[in-house]
Length: 321
Image (cartoon, rainbow, N blue to C red):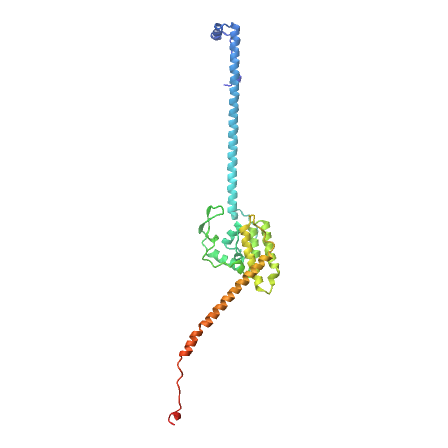
């Protein structure tokens, strides 16, 4: 009961005679007894009001906390649903891709191997071979014969294992991939613009796409590109392969750098590496040829020494003359 609504009793009434008499027996007059009883009631009523107010405040705080908790729970639920939706959009981009209005194209859609696509989506290094005409043709044939539901488990960058399509994993039994340094310039010219377009499709940052464009343009414009020395032309491709791999290994670290400007010293080292490799191969070939040539000399001499003499023929006139 709310003590604020309580009505103070009239202690002069006969029904409170007993309470008054106890105080009168203590030496108080009847008026003093009435005032004392009234003061005691007021004191208790004020204390009850304080406790009542505190109780109402606690109830209000509890109600507010409950409302806040419910609002937070609803917000958390909404955030969780939104996060789930965003994660689903991230994992299944094709599901949420906007529909483009237009006619069915006459030319077939060209897509690289799923392994290359997975590497590009992750922003990892991927060989240019997959984006040459040959690599795209191999991907087309592989897509027609691959089992679409085959899955394998692979660890992600955070260490958590997840199932991925087997077609998105590099098949060790597949045809060997041509390393970047072993590509022809024609194949390089096929692959570079193709991989750039797929970088954009898979949301590579603009600065990274621009860096690769400038890097490969600088290689094409370098004076060694059309040099009479074939090793210089190959050195550009070797430099491209080496430095692009190194860039992917160091990107995001304190040792990172940009590929845009060609390091001429490293390019010269690449040319020397090719020269030494060619010299070693030529030397090994010369030694092999010499060994084969001279290893047959003793056998030839032996055959000449033990070969029977041809028979002698005498004219009958000589024998019987």
